[in-house]
Image (cartoon, rainbow, N blue to C red):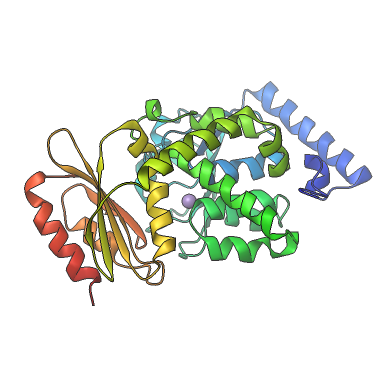
Length: 357
Ligand SMILES: [Mn+2]
C-alpha cells in the first residue's frame, strides 16, 4: 500500500475536521492580508533534492504563493537575487548562511522577515528579531530533516527522500521508521531522492533535464511521493536520463586505485556534469572506507575536482580542497572549481597523504 494514509495535504498534515477548516480560514485570511498590503513572499532554495523537498514540506503545511528563487545545486549565491522591502517574508532553504551573509544583513536591515533552515557552514548567526534561524551543521542532518522536525513530521516521506538525496542513507532509514515502509517502498524513496538530487548537478541550467523551479512545481501537487512517481512525466524523464548517464559513468576507467583512495577522470560533457555528483555518492557507498576524487578534464587542460571523504570517516575534504585555488566545501564533500593542469600531481599527492594510512 504505497503511501497509505498520505492522501491529501490536510490529511497528511494531521489536521482533522474543524481544525482543518480553521487552519484554511486562517491561511486564506493571511493570504488576503498579504495581498491587500502588497506584502510579498520569496522562497529561496537550493536546486537539489534537499532544497526542493524542504520547500515542498513547508508549503504543503503552509500554502503560500511566492516568488521562487533557485538554480543549479552549485549556485548557492541566491539571496543576492532577492529584491524585497520592509514587511516582506523570505524563506531560505539549504544554502550556507555564511556564503549569503551580506545579502541576509541587507534584507534584515531593510525590515524583511527571514526564516532560515540550513545545515551548511554558518559562522556567527546574526542577532535580529526578524530572523528565525533553524540551523544544525551535524553531518547526519539535512535541511529537509530540520523542516520535518519543525513541522512535527507532517510530511516525513519527503524528508526521507531528501536525506537519501543528500547521501545520508543511515539517517534516511532511521527517519523513515515511523512510516512502517517495506523494503521495496524504502528503495523507491531512495531512488526518488537520488533522481531529484541528480537533476540539480550540472554547471548551468542548460545541463539539466528540468530546471529546479520547474521540478518543484511538478512535485507541488503531490502530498504523496509514491503518487508523484506513479503519475508525473517529470519523474519518468529523470528516471530515463539518470539510467543512461549512470550506465556511462560506470564504464569510466579508474585512474588511481588503492585501498583507501580512488581517482577517476571524466570528460567534460553534459552527461558527466549531470551525473558526477551522484556517481561520486554511489562510489562512496560501495567502498565506505575509501576516499574518492572525481576529476573532470576542462577545455583548458585543468580540472574540476569533486572529493568525497570516506563515508566511515567524514572528514578532511574541505581542508584538502581549500589548499588549492578555487577550492571549498564541507568535511564530507568538497571540490575545486578549476585546478590548474600543472597542479594535478600536487593534488594527487595531497589527496594520498590526507587519506592513505
Ligand atoms: Mn542539503
